[in-house]
Amino acid sequence: MTDNMHQYDAIIIGSGFGGLYSLHHMRDLMGLNVRAFDSAGGVGGTWWYNRYPGARVDAPSSPFYAYTFSNDLVNEWEWTETQTSQASVLAYLEHFADRFDLCKDIEFETWVTDATYDETAQRWTIETDKGETASAQFLICAVGALFVANMPDYPGIDDFAGECYHTGRWPHEPVSFAGKRVGVMGTGSSGIQAIPEIAKQAEHVTVFQRTPQYSLPARNRPLSEEELTGYREDWDDLRESMRRRGGWPFKTIRRRASDHTPEERHAIYETLWEEGGIHLAINSFSAVLMDKDLNNEVSEFVRGKIREIVKDPETARKLMPDYYFGTKRQILDNGYYEAYNLDNVSLVDLREDPIQSFSSTSVRTEQGEQPIDMLVLATGFDAVTGSMLNLNPKGRGGLSLKQKWENRFDTYLGTTIAGFPNLFMIHGPTSPGVLYTMPLGGERTMRWIADCIHHLKEQNLGAIEATDLAAEKWGREIDDMANQTLYPLTDSWYMGANIPGKPRQFLAHLRGSQYFDQLNAVAEAGFEGFVFEARRKGA
Image 1 (cartoon, one colour):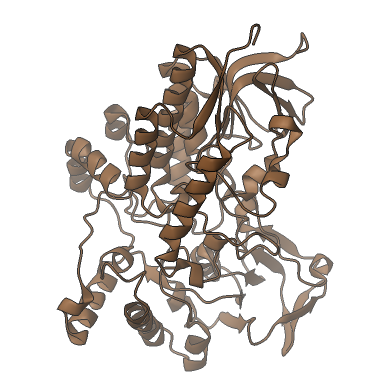
Image 2 (image 1 turned 90 degrees about the vertical axis):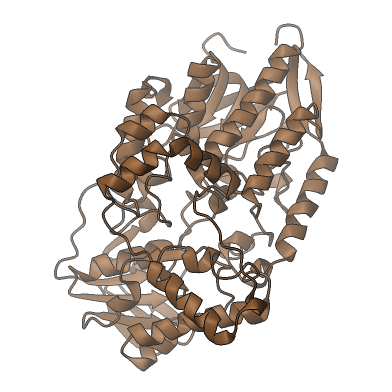
């Protein structure tokens, strides 16, 4: 190691929810010398970049999409809406960083360009785009599950000369839509949130729909002071409920469809639709993601709502999804379907009218030409795996992650990778990740990582590494869980299907609370599935 190389106990990449908590926990609670790096200009991770109009948490989130470990933090932060906006999430994370004085140990606007494991020193060495090098025993990758933007490869798209923005890389300065013809490409979460907001200003919005979506009404509303006070008073119980119920404190109602007549089931769907949020997805019937006939019934109910809301029958027809309800990321909206009743919003269904080319001022489809002044790309992300592959660390024997994951995204416990000692991931592939409350998931994952680090230091060990056998067994367990459901029957980013050439594999653990029980059980069994190396002299 060179004399000018900075030495740390741990290096963190990322300063979103997972990275900030990791820095706080390892530095303030474990007393480790830690440095974090982030390409962004400030804290927030995904929430620093995703500033598009209408950006919100995809859940009735306040005050639960937040850290849970500190009652003082819960009591001092004022949430104002039931569905938290991007601006509120970012302000909260900035407050958290200030409260615990975290920014002094974060290098912003700094890309980690290389990360290599030194087997002799039992340490990771990183290089940055600023020419810096640093070394640490542990590398914590809190790089974000939804970070690497998926840029569409349509013929001639670079010929478009107007303003062009990706929702995942939105400008920090205001973007004006006034008097402009705006094309929005994509109707995933960001597109569905942005379209109604853009339509309020734009002269015209043309939506280029690749796949129609089942979107549920968010029913966002102000959060009353009485509600917030009640949450604070009950916080310990709510936190425990979140830990046992997949990250949210809401009680899941377990119903069997066979106990109800079709008419009774329809009445239940109506009630849950009016309640809004994710209730139709989680509180209709327990087998909705496993039983094709039941799922088709719920799917047709939502399609019926689209027919009721959208006045033009042809537009409503184009908006009808044909995959199984709930098997893509569940979206909540604030007036998405209603936007198609506006005179200044039109829909192009790319399944029926595909894009042929672009000009400097228009999009040419098979059936015509759409003039636009601005193009908004709501085309999503290379989800869950893209950020790690973008980093592409090199592990034992110089093996790169791109080589390791060429055919399958193998991990052990969603946090470690065989062949990559002392590397840990927050929200990695085959963890609950995006299917769990990510702030709480990050907290719980970091605490398990802390147990690993404590074990190594207590036993004077230099390295911990997952075995190939444990990773293979874990992968089969994830596949078996997914194959009991309808998820694998849908092309979604859960399956990696949105990225050409990406291996098809279900990328998440479906039982969040059980997952963290498994982590604890592995630790209690002496970190079963791992091998250890004694600390080498001088390491």
